[in-house]
Amino acid sequence: MVKSGGEWISSIDPENHILALPGVARFAVVAQEHPRWVERPVALVVLAAGAEVSAEAVREHCTARFANWQPALRR
Image 1 (cartoon, one colour):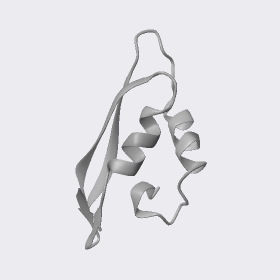
Image 2: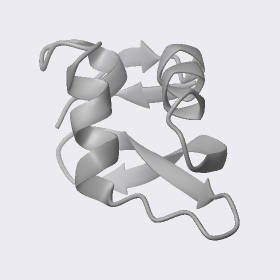
Image 3: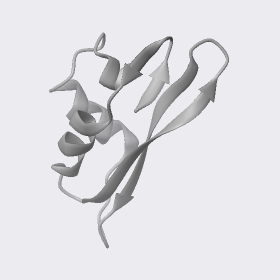
Image 4: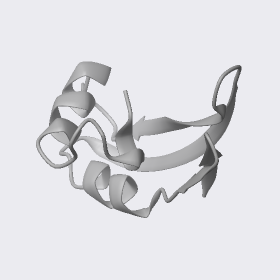
């Protein structure tokens, strides 16, 4: 859980969704300090051996499932 702007954000939904992306071996969400929101969720992605997955591909994969306003994936 990450507390951002007074709101608790769960990492479970985005973690499960990103793990379903081909080429992703492991994934975690951690909190990063933010001057306005106190903390923001940050994705750490470990690719499978030989896989090539860009940060943009991960964002596009998530956009298909999560709306921009959803706390799980604010951009």
